[in-house]
Image 1: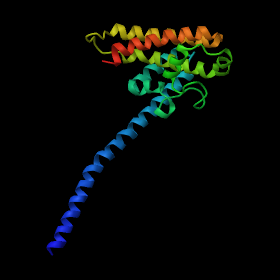
Image 2 (image 1 turned 180 degrees about the vertical axis):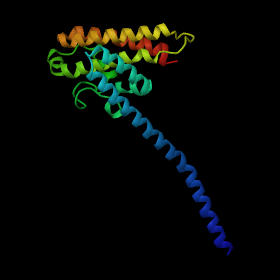
Image 3 (image 1 turned 90 degrees about the horizontal axis):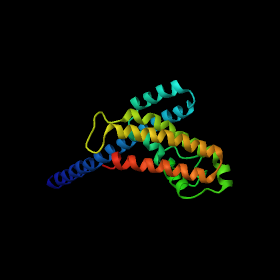
Image 4 (image 1 turned 30 degrees about the vertical axis):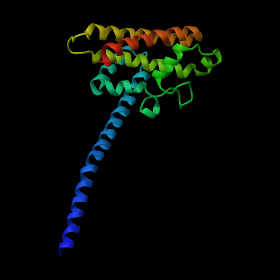
Amino acid sequence: MRKYTRVLSGALVAAALGALFLAPARGRDDDDKEQAMKTAAAKDAVLKLVGDLGKEDEFKKEAADVAAKHDIEFVMKQFRPRDKGGLGVGAAPGATQYDGIETELLFLGKKVLPQKDLAAQQADLQKMAEVGLAVAEVAPHYAPKKDEAGMPIKDWLKFSDDMKKQSKDLIDAIKGGNPKTVQDKANILNGSCDSCHTEFRDK
């Protein structure tokens, strides 16, 4: 009887320990699923917003709606590669040098793209820059509610305006088909993004 009791007690302890370790794992899985769902929902919203470029009033109204429904974290994740939950660049990975919008922009700013590559990738790169323009339209709605030390509201709004203007400039450069101009405009846009991240995100 004692032996049976010891075996039973051991089994109960093992089961309790198993439950103790499994519970956090299940919690992490649930968190991961929730994050993935929110990222996917933001992706659909950003793509719809890109599709409404050119419809000025509707575009602005929809941008405000995107900000109201989706946290900035999930909107900004669209600049990541596809395998990290982002939009990617082109119809599939490999359409351009890098699949993530952020990394492709950095690449474009560092190296003059060969003319034939720019011609082949023109539509995909234009769509990439249009995503930047769409996010720039959403960005002002995420401005801090009040000034904080080293992070004034006016700076957030300025960075948002810069991103909007520079995304438009990049779109025009890609349409124009001059690789050096594309590099210059990508560099300017990357500089603004870095400045914003330094002041707001990296603190």
